[in-house]
Image (cartoon, rainbow, N blue to C red; front, side):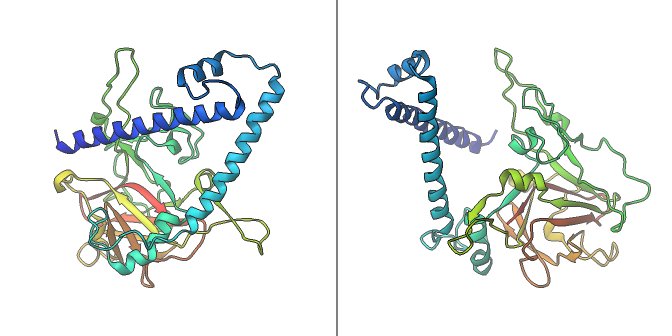
Amino acid sequence: WHPGWKIQQLTGKMIAYFMIESLQAALEELHEMIHPNEANATDSTNVRARSLGDEPTSTKALTDTYRDIRERLQSRDKVDFELFLNSSLAQFDLGEHNKGVGPVKNTTLDIIQQSIYRGNAVCTTTLLPADSRYRGIMTETGHVGTYLNEQYDLGSPYRSRAVPNVPATYEHPTSPFHMVYVPGDRRSGSCVNGTGYEIDFKDYYAVRYGEGWFTETFPKKSMIAAYGHERDGGSDAGAKAKNSNRGLILVCTIYCPFGNCPKGTVSLEEIGPSLNETNGGNVTIRVDGKEVVAVEKYDTCYILVNEDGLQFGPRDQYDISIIVNQPGGTVQITSIIIM
């Protein structure tokens, strides 16, 4: 038990109530748009009854009306989104004393805050629930499912695979990363009607000592297509253009309550070159062949740093390679964010 659980439960309920109220208000407003002269249009009970029970005299006319409203609202959303992306962050206190983000250098924040809060970030996460895993977008295997049927890519049980006799080399790495779950965490909790309610699982990519190099491309093209956004190219461009990222890479690892990590856990702060077991880091990472020389902590994530700074050059995808050099060690990655 932990007091944070109660706080999270309270916060979750407050957010849920707000979303329900907003949804009800949206339905009432939509009904008023379709039936502006109808009496008691704001009464939620009557709105639901009329919306579900009335048969319009002209289905085609009603469909066109709904379509017009949808297109108008979508156009308004695009304008609001552009205003949001181009708005200033100066009014927000994101300094190094902000306890919510941890001890981050001001110089780092100056570079990354625009990318985090206003950029075209694409997050590949193993954590559940995640839309990208349920729909098979993250793995590109075509396996689609829900938390009820678990037909999506589950990954493999932790420690279910043997360490190879010959570790994979950098030139011939293992790909993709191994996604694993802890079988004991998959509790079969369900409600009285049989609906499962245990859907939050801390799955992760596991890279173990002795397995050699792992390499995978992030984000996948399917992730970019599904979650990357487009921005207006401006009057001079005359067309929409994808907002390219800045070449910033965040790698997030498992959260260890009270700092109690599983035995053998290797932190990304132990990073260094893969020279040998006595002269090098406990973990080595390369991005498109470029060595990661350090990391800067950002909450439970780490910003990868190369010899030229925080950025690895703007492009759509990056080949991220990793090897664990500490005997018995494991790196457990939950998310990789490209910004």
